[in-house]
Image 1: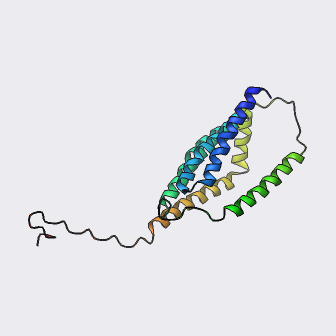
Image 2: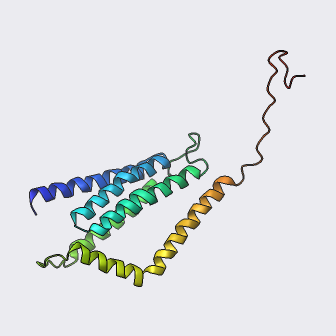
Image 3: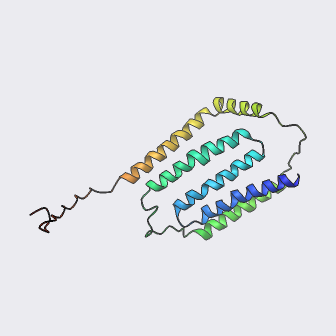
Length: 187
């Protein structure tokens, strides 16, 4: 691996991991949603560096575009998500840190112990890779893909229903004060 490739990989890793830490540690859930954008862009950059063109475009269009907008839309429709008087912090940070550390240690152990095969084969052209992936999505994974889209639609509808329910009746506006007599309603 040459120096330029290593520098690009480290830069994209930092672009992915630092915003991910801000997502986890942000005190406002809306700010955490906004920190997802550079994280998604870093992942897209990693796909581009791996020459996975289809996943690069998919990451940009679906995750950095549609999913991020959906998450922010749902957060802003959720009651008290942006209320400064409500506590936005999570009291389970130590437990979450312990679970994440255990998963990171387990993943590192598995990745280090796995016998990775190094090939000298030339990679397939991007068109062949994209065609194989498209055929797999249309033939093998069409139903799970549609089920996932229905689940996202149900989540969006649920967020709208939760945001609109239990608000009570809208109070009637107070009568405007009569400017000449100083009484309400012109009495």
